[in-house]
Image (cartoon, rainbow, N blue to C red):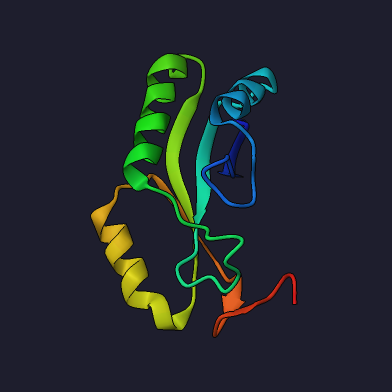
Amino acid sequence: MIYSDYHLHTNFSSDSDTDMEKMILQAIQLGLKEIAITDHIDFDYPDPEFPFLFDYTDYAKKIQQYQQLYGDTIQIRIGVELGLQAHIKESINEFCQKNTFDFVIGSTHCIKRLELYHN
């Protein structure tokens, strides 16, 4: 069995303050063989306190840096958790075509800009 976690949020997400390297080191300590960093992208998120957007170039560079550093011990995938809403379909498609991911999670956090978890 390959122990893995493909749903991890670092401080690239508005809902996490966890340093990426610390998360990777913890995964190694726990004996995981694969992880995917899947920080949030939620276009048109209704709460300005949580923008849920990040710079893909910085994100990918950081993950690639840790792939080089820890790749002999753990497989690190570039992922994303996309907030799905019908009215932003074009933005989501454009983002996915423009950027490269190993793993994508599609999640419903809002419907018609109504945030489901805090309202």
